[in-house]
Length: 282
Image (cartoon, rainbow, N blue to C red; front, top):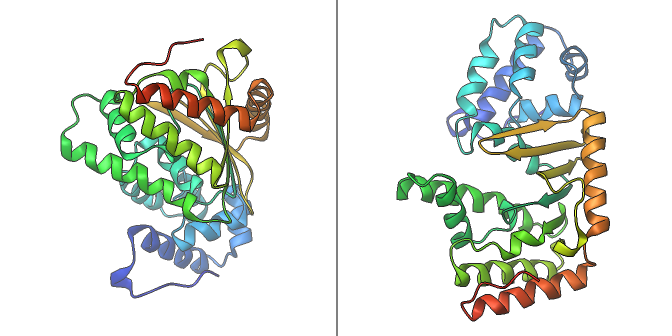
């Protein structure tokens, strides 16, 4: 059983949600393993829910209500938690990202959020929704940069990013912003915090080029995959789908330049941006 931390008054909404779930589970005479079997998830996931480290998906919250006979209580409460920091379609993926021990991502258009600088994030978010107020943009940028704090942990997660060449040559925020952003990526890689490869235009077509894909591995839960399109996203732990996304990612990695050559290319393009010129496509 997961214990509480701090007083009730200091608990987050997520922790209160988890405490209530634990209380209702115990009142039903169920162990975490028994509840997990009935909800069709792993016992470790129930432990994460009860500790407030993760928020149930809408489907899991619905099944919790069905199993515990709580008449939609956890599904309704979960909806209020999901509004907090990210777009609804990304909320659960953002939570999973914080618990992953291995993150792999193929980026087709933008620099992955975990790698973005403040200036790049501002420009990218402004582009996504031009009518955002400055205050709204500030909040979104802070949330995006907060996600990247997982890279401050020298032991976990391992992060492997594959960038389509379009990512480093599409000007977001202007040449100076791009130069800073690309150097940030190179610095993270040189420090050993991430691995980066670039799929050059010359590699041609490959299965992953139509969409970004993020793969996440966990110490105590099934692998998950997240794909995203305009204003929508999908997170899944279905083994057959995760395997298909894995195959596409691996083929993109096979088409990419080796890590050192990739960093050389990124650094070279950054130098071109220093001259305030948009690097030409090869």
